Structure formats: structure tokens, C-alpha cells
Length: 232
Length: 262
Image (cartoon, rainbow over all chains, first blue to last red; front, side, top):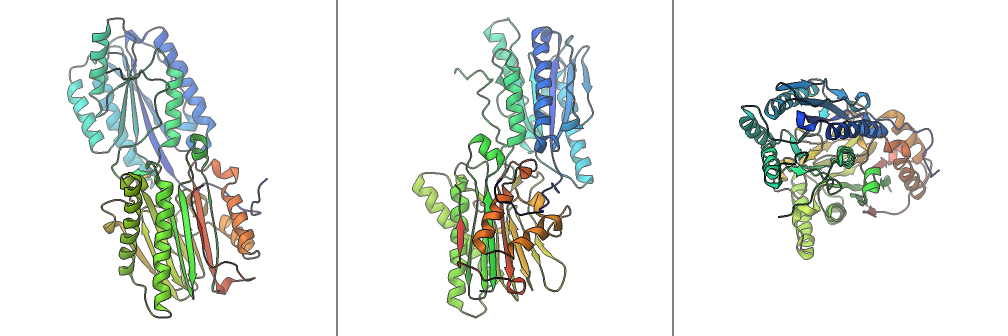
């Protein structure tokens, strides 16, 4: 043991939270291997959050699952140490717009609650995972609102495209481009079904959200471990 | 020597895990009755912020020490001094950036500093980190971190809008000064951030005042690197403690000290 001053108390007197929203596509095209792999990835994420005390006490997690008959299912906000991964099932359509609208509102509500409680927070992360084109009517307006929220530095948005379709390269590129409209950054594309690596990256990101100038883009670790490299 | 100074930086666990250097730096000097001390915290989002924080701390301390030396026992320190001093530090950072072909923002760092004699002085501050002073005759004085809406976003010496974010706090009497980077705040400060956290600070000051500065610095470094701190923060942790002669025990050693990334 290194030279440590005796009898010193080392406890955490700070209150600081990082809100994280996972917006997860549970439409029919995710059925089978994709949803199973996503569920496994969420379980791994749950374990890795609890492994790190600095994250377990600071992360605030919300899941927004969307699919079915244009349904959006929202969890409660939970501390990372209490969060249990949902067991998602896939069927139905892709109401991405409604899901993002709910996520943006819940982020603002969470921020007001934290402010009211005198708890400081980092800029929230919104992670959108989807394999296809939105099917709800107003998704484009919601996508615009989401980009505006990002521009106004209210939230950092990371759309991640899951390539489940065998409809051909053009259709896949188009679906990825549509997903990218929810952010000022492009959507990243998951390589195969590398959810495990994706969630490892996400838990590293939660740890690493590092200090930056006010209003500057948040920097996360490199997603090279799970994304398809840009080809063009 | 009217001030005893103990200081150390410990690299953050997160920085070790991802191969980042320690981006905190501190520097101090003692000129006559004056103590001049700075803690600077390089931005995790900036590519060469460990150079920025070290250079900034050294520039500010040597500048102020020069002024103190020149003034002798005269009254030399006022709030106006600090904008000049930061301007000079920014020029040094700009020169370093130009020489290396980096943008100035790559050297982004915060700054918390103190210029004190036993009868008072100033705290000056841009961005986060914190200074806390225990006075001889009243409530503690603190210089709080300034963040934006979000806790991980702050203002830097290198920012174009640094001047409106330079905050100066006058201090009347000082028994003890603590300055720290934001990584050390959760366990050094109390929950309300109105004073030092006694279960941390009391054993630390008791120990330090019984040993010489070299021994104290080593123990402080070991304490800041205690694995218990890894559960509190992944960030670098710097703490500089200075005790005025009213609290002194055995005599002290060197006049000045610096630390930068390693």
C-alpha cells in the first residue's frame, strides 16, 4: 500500500447525474436474431453499469421501446445501479417519430426534476437504435425537432442503424439516411449484429463523458469496434 | 517563511484506463509574505491540454511572483492585475499552439488561483475546480466552479469569452487555503460546497502539519491516488493546501514548486 494519510475519510459528497435514454426499435423486422442479440447486449450493459461504482451512482437510465400497432412503451427513470435490462419482443410497425418525441419530452422533465432537487447533470445522451424507415406520419417533423434540440445543446443524439434487411444496398442506405435525420451527425451502422461491442462502447462512453467547453459537441470514444466504416 | 504548502496531483483511473495523461497541473511560489498558487485542469476534450494546464499554471505564477518581487512590501495586487495575468498566459498558450501547429483550443484548461498574505488577498478563477479558505475570524470563503447547464461543461482560459468568466474574490484573513481540480471536489468539499469536508480535511491537515513538505507531498499524492477515490471519480485529482504561519509547526523547505503532467 502506498503512503496514505491515516484516518482519512474518502467519500463522495457530489451529486451529479448523466441521463441516458435508449430508444429501441422493436418492430417486426427486428424479430429473431436481432432482438435476441439486442436483449443480450442490454443485459451486458446492465452488468457493466453496476461494475463501475462511479457510473452506477451517476447514470440515470430510461428506455423507450417502439413497435407494435404504432406503440411506444416508456420505462421509469432509474439509477444505473437499479436498472434492469428489459426483455424486448419484436412485432409490428416502426413509430420512430412518436418514440423520439416521447424521449425528448422525458429528458426535459428529468432535467427539471434534477434541477428542482439541486442535482447537477451532464448533457443527456439519446441513443436511437433502429433497423428501418419510420412508419408514423409525423416523424419528419419530430426529426427536425430532434436536430433542433441537439443544436440547442439540450441533448446529444446518436442514431445507430441496425442492418437487418436483405432488401439490397440502396434500400439499406436510404433507411440509414432517414435515421440520420434525427441528428446533425450521420447515423452509424452496426457491423453485423455486434451489439456486444456496441454496448461496451456505450458503457465506456458513459464513463468517459469528459469536460468540454460550454456548448461544444460532446466527445465519445471511437465507435470503430462495432460500426461499419464509411466506404465513400 | 510564512506559508507551508503541500500539493499533489494524481492521475484519474479513467485516464489510466484509456491511456490519457494526467491533465491537471499546479504551480506555486512564495515571495516575502506572499503566497502565489495556481491549479489548472486541462480539458479532457482537448488534444494537448496537459501542456496547456502546465504552461498556464507556470505562466500565471511566475508573472505574479515577478510583480510581488518588484513591489516589495508595497500594495501591488488588485482585481485588475488578474486580467493582465490571464492575458499574458493566453499569449504564452497561443505561442505554444502556433509553434506546434495546434489550434489554441487544443490547450484548453481551467484556472483557479490565489494571491495571499496572512492579512488577505485574492482568489481568481476561470471555469471549474474550486478554492476554499478558512479564515481567522469568520465563515469560510469559497470560489465555486462555474459550469453551464451541464456539469461537464465549463469555461476555459483559452476560450474567446474568458474575460466575463474571470471571477475574483477578495479575502481578508487566511488561516488555510485549499485549491483543487474538479476531480478532487467530491471528497475534499462538503455536500453544500460551503466548506472543506472535515472527515477528509481534519486528518489531512493534522498529518501534514506534523511533517515536512516533501514527506507531506508524498503522503498527499498517495491519498489522492487511494483506490477509494476511483469509485468516486475517473478524473485527475489535484489538491494544493497552504497553511499560514498561525498554524505552523516545523519549518518548511523550498520556496516554490510545480507539477505538470507525467
